[in-house]
Length: 384
Image (cartoon, rainbow, N blue to C red; front, side, top):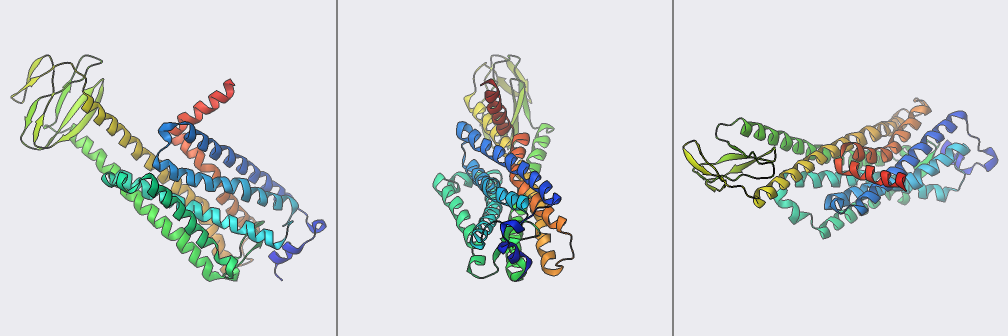
């Protein structure tokens, strides 16, 4: 009988933690509390802020839910094992918690993949976004994500590998040495393929961001751009101009510049002054430009979407940094068992668990809307 099975059959008086286990347990307790606080706060912010109740944030909430399960169930059970020096319950309970550990991990990976695809369509294929991401379709995608995660986590319950207590990491999980083929399968399907999808999506997202910035810079320096400034602080300017070929019009409204591509046709701007530009008569009249303001809001919204996509790319990178060491630990356990110090194996699972506490921090620090929500929520708590 191997060490992991022996740990499962130890009596309570045989369980004895060492100093290293106590330190690791304390660190994981901090991780668990941070993850619970951050992810719960994220749920509260989205539920209270109508502006944040978007289709994309439905997928973020799916990721947050998986992180909450990790923080509320999986990490505390691991902490108990560390403080007691082994697994205090039976084999059936260990299999259950091993399954939930795997399920939440796979769900996190699939949720990040879902969010990346959602961001790709929104930023790179905006004309298809509303058609694809209806509320009904989004709910189905989230449910499909959970179902696929369930299927991928089930084989050890059916005999392909097994869930048992892993003494080196002091938690119940899959014993990869029992079925190396399942280890390779999970690394490929649950890490390799999703990571490839997320990487490709984010490459296209950043390419779109880069091309957009280049176009804006080119338009700003183009001699074919028409720039009109209105000295009135609360007024807007419209130009009436016949356009024989496509070019761009840059409008400065309340000290803010917005550039719009214009195809062949007529662009209408109105003002109370007459002026000449490129031989064309421009008639000006102080007015409120509802159309341009709508375009300005749309441009601002798109800018925020692109910025959020960049934030999500950082989240993906940090997720990979968090769990890639564990994948290495899996391979070392198969091919170089007992040749790597136990501290390395324990550090990899602690690093992986820490990812559940990192995501809310990233949203709060890097995303303005989530950051504002965090500040408003905690300011209200202090006042009360």
